[in-house]
Image 1 (cartoon, helix red, strand yellow):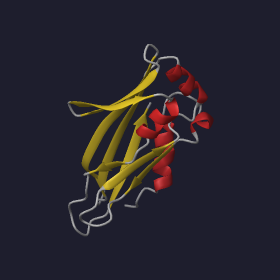
Image 2: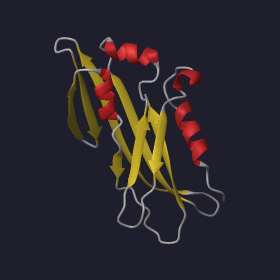
Image 3: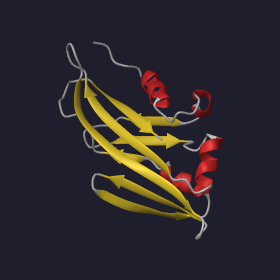
Image 4: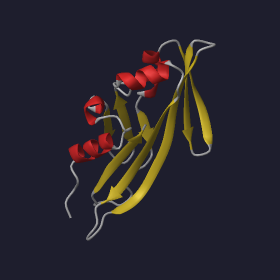
Length: 153
């Protein structure tokens, strides 16, 4: 069985984004950097999450933006590939007009973590786009693995 190219996975993730036309979503990037050695960690990075002007306008008007991530680790197998593990988290940003601040929250598992309050959408976006280290690591020596990431907005 052959390995799925990263460009295909990125294109699939972009199609999974909100119902906006693909042309409005082209600037959003999702990257997974595999671990560098046994002691490393996979790193998930996003850029330009608010590249769509309609989405920016909705958030600035007080509508919450919910960004749901799902990272999967697959082992290349014989007839079928095997899902070795998965990690899910959600980032939420919402404008509070009374405080004139953007609140950023991360939900993962049963935990909710307040990531802060920001004066501008740009500074909130910078917090959302900070790289996340994942402990989703290959366990079998000599096996071939790949990561798949999905973002639902």
